[in-house]
Length: 247
Ligand SMILES: [Zn+2]
Image (cartoon, rainbow, N blue to C red; front, side, top):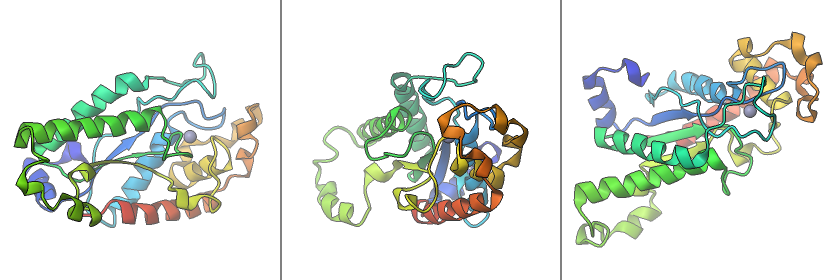
């Protein structure tokens, strides 16, 4: 369900049943002359909409204002919107803290932008990971008081940790395309991989009439894109979401 359309009794049900709460996290960034600037975020939104048909999740309104960076193109006339990681982290902390206060304990931000080396991290996902950690510490200290971790109630912490039952799992950040897709689906920026995803998920975000206007190396493979290839990627992403967004 879309969070903004939920009634309080539905929110209470989602909390009680521990529905995954998914935040589409992304940027607005130049993706060549042939593709819309919202591509990275649209890919997350559209796959979550498909996933929602098979299981109960809460979809938060998407956050588009991540750290696009000007690495691909300067912003003048290109459309990239850059909001730096140091500004995003406090925002993310407040957002996640607010969601914890509501009662959610199964919160997941999903991001597609700059995720090819997700373990090391990039500014947007690092900011939201950091914000999530800060929010959890702050929430627990507010709710349980200082010394909560050292109290006897937490004596099974490491045993629970091994089973994946951990307060630090209350807020997680995931790449849309997991490392397991490496070599199985092209990971690129505005090339055949991303363009195919958009053709499958959101064809109005691609205009083939503008392929010829591209000059960047990263868009060379874009004209080879197809909805069929994109569907293969979507199927892999949905498989990843099935194992990531669990109750
Ligand atoms: Zn992209």
